[in-house]
Length: 356
Length: 121
Image 1 (cartoon, rainbow over the protein chains, first blue to last red):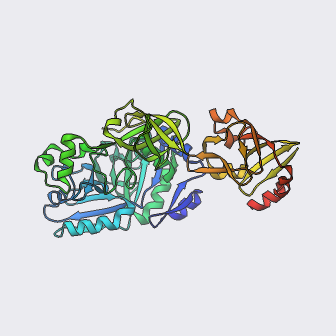
Image 2: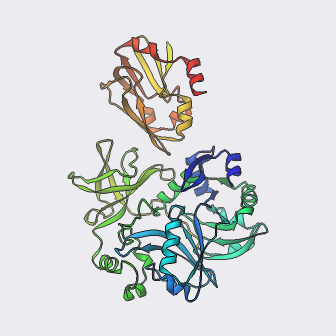
């Protein structure tokens, strides 16, 4: 894909060993709006794509995650996290029941650690890395119309479902999900065919390429966690407002790593919570910004922050003490040594528009 | 009036003791969409080579360095409301502030247009 990114004028940066476009000549804000208004094409081939195969693979994977995997119907995909013994998050991932195997998509930077974790935790399961598969994401309200002529079967997919199908004659796995808050698809295809497929998608005037910069501002407005920012080995999924990934049956069994902390936090509430923050002015409050109460007490830290092109203003995600987490709470963000007023707001900043 | 440029990609348009300061078209292009600008308040001193403000694009925050010693006499309120002006007209309506020069001799060390164009290649 690299020659295509260069041909499209992508500004490339090194990320987790990959050379990836941060933006194309249109710029991050225009690419962001393109995705919200029409459709954007992202190359997310750096994400780790794994196949898990073996006896009772779904129930065995439940040893490492707090979600229901055995209950996942064929063709369904589910968001979950690997937890550690202390209830912290080792990575977040999407698990798909692909019929005779599970298909996992994990973070690029955590791929090696995840592979080791899976192999150590599931010795009887074959863990295969699909190193020769690319991953293209078509996201936005026009995404379905873009895929229609190339893969008519994609229209039948609903949010968080997945199927193998031909796209422009190329054998692919297509899932209706994404990381932008918009309707859209992620298409896993052979790396050798990725440039051809990308060109076919880009030939549609409704589509324009978008880089990592827009991907980040889109997921931020959508209130979606980014590993290494909102999620890390010290942070529990409950603090991250991901309690919904732990179904009642798994809570009752309590048989996943870190269950003691996670169940206690589900019962009593966590000490700190992930919140959305809207600064009052236009100053951006980026990762690491200190969050104070209006009385001047430190209550937490921003984990992601930037400009939201759809909001047309600054937005931040951060952790604050549970007592300060209610929407409407006035807090201060300390940017360049100056306390600046902000308000806790409900997430997401921009409503999700998934096709359920 | 004379226009000077710095290695930190600012311009300074000098008219006697007074000057306007902004960032160059090259800098604006590199930064991408500007979404926030903050410079010192009117009446505050700026010191050559020291930062006196911040310019934020969607991508990153960058310091603004003072090209000369002086005192801020005005800030551009138009860019507070519409930071995109810095991209649309970096060397015109997207000016950042006006200053009263403390030491006009410092201008000697700055670049003219052709030297700056060569500097950015």
